[in-house]
Amino acid sequence: ANSIVLACGGIGGIFKNSTNYESLQGDALSICLHHHVELENIDYIQIHPTTLYSTKKGRRFLLSESLRGEGARLLNIHGKRFVNELLPRDLLTDKINEQMRIDHSDHVFLDLTPIGETALRTHFPHICSRCQEEGYDVFHEPIPVVPAQHYFMGGIKIDLSGKTSMKDLYACGETSCSNVHGRNRLASNSLLESLVFAKKAAEDIMFSQFEPKALLPFTMKKIYQDTSKLMQDYQDELWSEIERWKLIHERNNIEA
Image 1 (cartoon, rainbow, N blue to C red):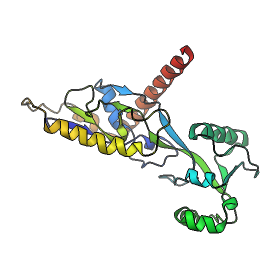
Image 2: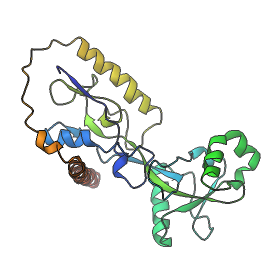
Image 3: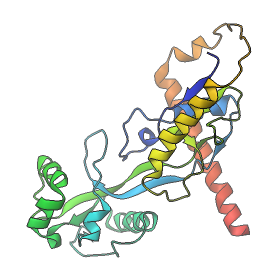
Image 4: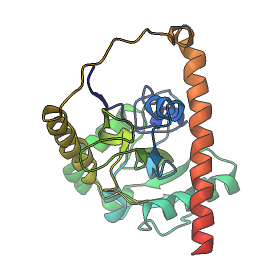
């Protein structure tokens, strides 16, 4: 191909709890690492503080901040409120994780009863029905919740045309880092990242002058014979790189 666009989604599949599909494992980032394509801010990983706890495999069901805005309370395993529920996502996640460590528990509870049954049925019908499907009566009992990875703000570094640091390679959507997010993203910016930068990349490809390319022999075929091992290697490499970026940002913050 004259041009390739990476649109592989985020990294939720490498986390125990995530609102993403398991197939989103950051393999595009690992491939870029192997080919020295520049990444950016890959430790900028958003955790949503309240998703419905489950022991089943698969995506976690997100319980909106609106619930806490309407009066839902976070409780520890002893039924005691332990935090201001309106803290920003990252700070609230830290408090919940700290409480789970104290309680030696893998979840806390979210009590929706202060909102009232009428308001719950009117404003949150989907949440009510999903919780009931899982066996929880939201009108009379608290429900178990756990923080889960939600959105990935870092990724493959791109410019305003979706170009990466490698010639004729583009990226868009959650796998890219367009710098429309900070460490805490604004919700609708995910649409900007996916739609606007995809269009910019397409336009740039359409109006580019390509040089004829000779077909290259596929010499890397052997590494794809054991995909399970390959994906595990990719995960290990990605975690190492995330930790490296985290240390860089921590050091920069200390120096600042």
